[in-house]
Length: 148
Image 1 (tube, rainbow, N blue to C red):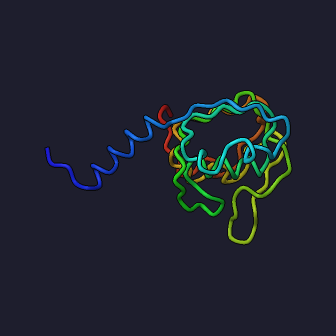
Image 2 (tube, rainbow, N blue to C red):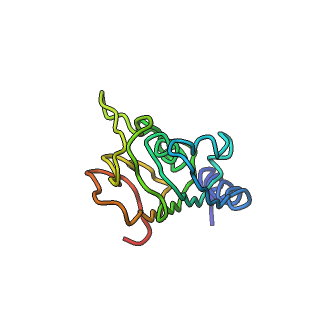
């Protein structure tokens, strides 16, 4: 079997992620505080994240970066693949989480907004809260989930 450099690099990256991968559960007592709970260097190592509490646009922007996509849809080095929001609640407020041309996308109460997880290619599973009443267009555009 002949390996190319690219395949060898991917295998090495996978092995390193397995060694350093992190699975964490965080309770947010206030929306917008997720970036304060996970260090800037640590955020690319988290592969499995459960959030308990309220999340707003600031938190969602950080989650997007952890899941491989920045605020403009550009790739990041984030490796978040499993996101459990079963005990979370989307609330209005915070920064915009996605910049669509000139307009920013902001969170609303109990709604997974437009482009919320767009281009978050490392995500393989998202458990959404039961409180969600609406999922807007393109919320999961360009995501590749395991069990659809």
